[in-house]
Length: 183
Image (cartoon, rainbow, N blue to C red; front, side):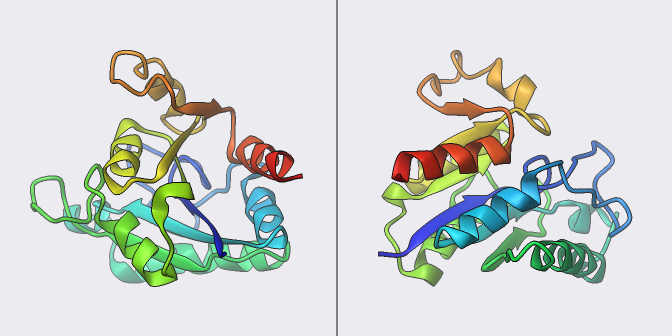
């Protein structure tokens, strides 16, 4: 059976910004995150990304800039022997009414279909409440990291019916925990 993990990008893999990540120069990996992806790859995991990128809808950056950021991430990962197996993003704004923008489950379902796996045993690692809501809506196991917006989100878990969600300090801690559970 294929082992798959789905990650949000901004705030989980790279530093986030309220002003949006608009260029490869602004795309800065969170310490340990790329090593964590490579570690998961080496353990047989396919790694997919599901990311809202409404900065495209707002005109802050274009699809070419997003592609350049993803190339930077892929190049840095390949130096560690890691890779991203699929990148799915929503370019829409909050009022566009699409099915892909988290908290809707469209991107996660698309990834499940692409890899032909049941999502019930797949983890989705995010840093905000919309990531957790999308995971629940898609039947994926939600995981929260305290990087990005995660610290603020962790404070909301009890009141938002997400008290059972596992919370980790970083993607590196998530990867280590998953691999320890398997051994």
